[in-house]
Image 1: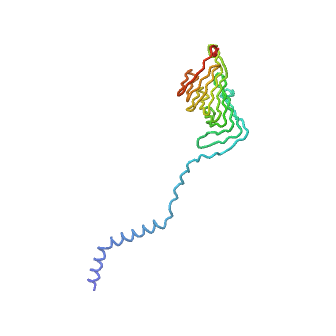
Image 2: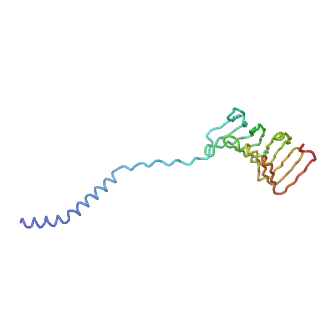
Image 3: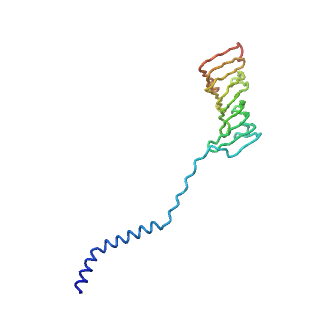
Length: 205
């Protein structure tokens, strides 16, 4: 009898490690199933192009480090979009002064500007006007006006461009083109497409 028990125990001991591993595996499986899942942090939803605030019949002014007026933006209604940090304005009027104090104004039925109004896209009856000034040598620079259904104005760098038909009036000179890129600082004007111009003697004086 003792010999039979001993033989049975010896056989059982051969399978004991396998049995123990099986018990451990079952225990681990049960533990995993019973443990609550770790909550993963929610991914931030992409910002949607929706306004976060509105303005009505407003005027916004910005100033430089010396306290001088840099720009003023006026409009009937405006909507700010936080995803692009842009302002969409109805019936807009913008006044902008460069470092020398030269005034440039922009008007349109609708505009899209960046945060400090240094870059403005004008839509519908768009106009950009630079008032007559004198250059560093004291020579007078005539009034300049740009007209079109779309104008893209860079107020700080005094650049105006458009991929749509435009009209440029410089003093009494007048030009039209299908597209335009004008850099006032470098005094370079690029007109493309059907270009027409009228030059009046003495117009720049």
